[in-house]
Length: 178
Image 1: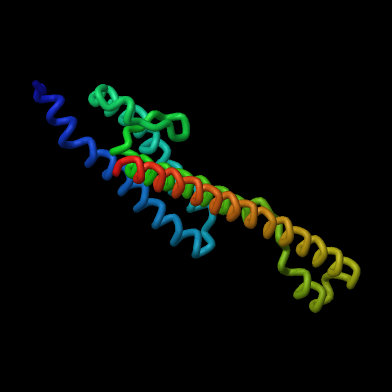
Image 2: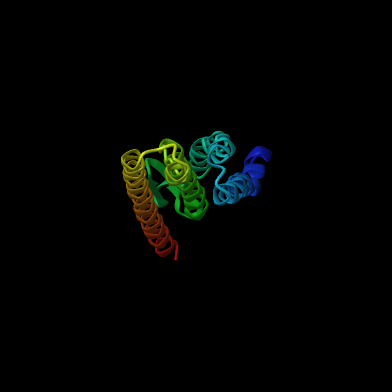
């Protein structure tokens, strides 16, 4: 027979997972808008608090597994966490948001790390730079843009790989539930 706490847990754990995912997703959506506006330091600061909420998830899944000890053989290890098949969609949703936030932070760091001087042409036209100095600055700017582009391509590749991996886990888990 279930106690009051057990019954409350079974009836509300899904809402806890949904609330965490909703909160992280809302902040992520806001950070994407800020990213699109080019306010990269604001992206990083707005996403900094999401890890505290995401860090709540593994202990909740572990407790969920304890409440369903009889279903332990119906669990799968994902990213080092043992998760019941019934909880895999929630787990993967939160994991996908966590990975998306990490990639967005990396993408926001890229333009802040580059010192791209866009003033060399104007300074050359106004006579503040010699032709050689202007050409040297333009070459440095080009090199910085190439590095930036390469870093962004790496981040996008990692994002695609993560997306494929999470989708495979999801498809595998869903086929196991049926």
